[in-house]
Length: 87
Image (cartoon, rainbow, N blue to C red; front, side, top):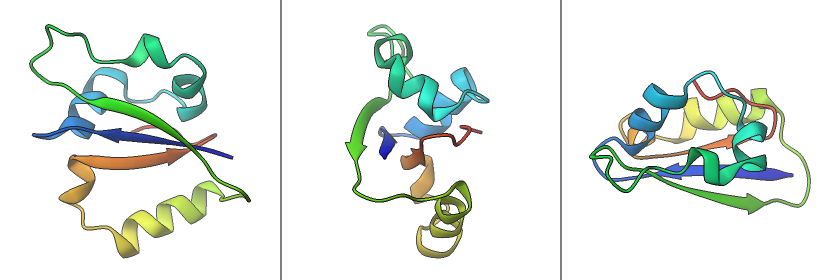
């Protein structure tokens, strides 16, 4: 299973979501260069793919984000699993 990490200072995840919200994380991972921040963009982010042995469901991902990660932290660094939509 692959996990997409989106991070960036000053609301990097929010900036990514504003530009690419609604896209499936699998699409982003399969076409990473298409979704990288442009050098001239003020609102920047970085993307990284992690591989995980085993599986998580979209519901597992949402549960972890809601129960274990502070909402404000998710604005600067977040993760999305294969099949999950970036909102």
